[in-house]
Length: 250
Image (tube, rainbow, N blue to C red; front, side, top):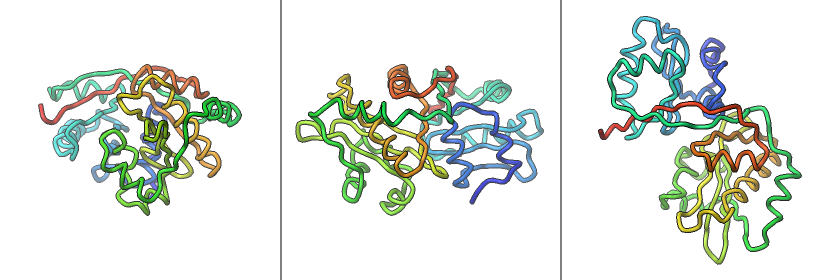
């Protein structure tokens, strides 16, 4: 169910988390009180706020939204007045920095191809069939498929790849969520294999897969290391921003 124009307008000027916003709007993840000029998108661990927070009822809406969230840790993007309203609720939270990348700029396939061909000690294995189920059973790969409840849903709307080295999977990249002709990238490396360039390889291969399907692949970085990979691949950083982390377990 696609969002109506009025709902889309509430999130139109938000640059960070653009892939998640598109996924939330396209997949009916919006929470909006009847007739309100504000709304929230709930996508995985994220809550993205849009519209007018100064409208009557917005504070109560925000408190209830957080209290009823099904996940233990909620990552809230609360631009401008939304952030002040959230602070006024008194909910304990932690502020951290993320980096946003231009939704409309895609890495060049020739650069990506060169990156994937640099190494001859790895093998790329698409996430399909049994590997979808395997990813759901591993902590480090769970978010590769967590937003796709069935293998069929993942095959239809998602895509991913694992990097194999020395007979084991060492890293991977997948669609955290998908939207019309696009995916938001999730990249992970096994803890004991970090710092060897595997994440860059996985991401480059996944973006090529998306482009071959005629899709875009969007990136939003939760760390400086992730932002470094994105720049290396050819994404254009639009700046840092703040995300508010709320731990429901106190």
